Length: 154
Length: 130
Image (spheres, rainbow over the protein chains, first blue to last red):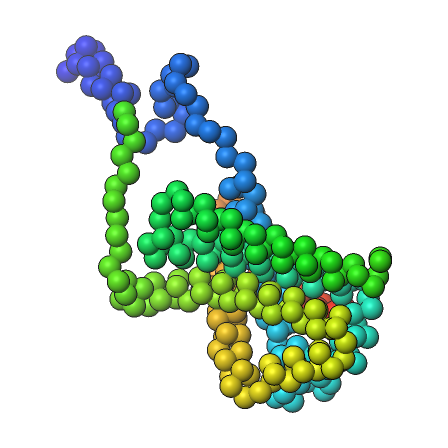
């Protein structure tokens, strides 16, 4: 095998369409894809919400909804007097705002892709899902912020 | 070259054919249940704002046997969502503190320990210990 044979073999390999990071052909005159702004934001909120719900939800739900009725805790943390007393603390208000906001952004984003996987596809349908589900997450978070600040700052 | 999107379609009930697929779908469902609990907690705060009778009526409704048992099933999904989330962290985003990425089981163990610590902090800071 001489040198020209090797050159013949290398050239087609470099022009191969196989995945080759950093070697994609760039055409200066081609149109660049539209810039995506909101999608990474909602994916980011989904991911943060996943951590928030995973770390904070189980213990919170257990104490509020199961500890009292099943007698699994010395007191009933969900009882009105106990909860009102804790609600005076700014940290507790911040906690519930973060918990509600995180869970809504995480769960609605997940629901969107479950519905898309189930067959609800198409630009119009997905735009409707984005509007409705992100709307629930945004307004729900704003509602939680309102209740967290109400009676504390105004 | 024009991009070609390959049509794909999963068969109905695909997630029942393999325990891994079922576990995946249960985690997805658990994530959606988290949003339902978020709305439920938001309503709890609304009732708290309304006053004692509204809050107590809502909490009593949540503690009636049928709702309580449904709540238990949904809570199970939230727990599975949390556990499987910790399991996937080491796989989806390998943590590389050493020459080789940490095995996912080690990352899972670290997350569980963190989870227990964070839960203790929530009990102490949010609910005033007992």
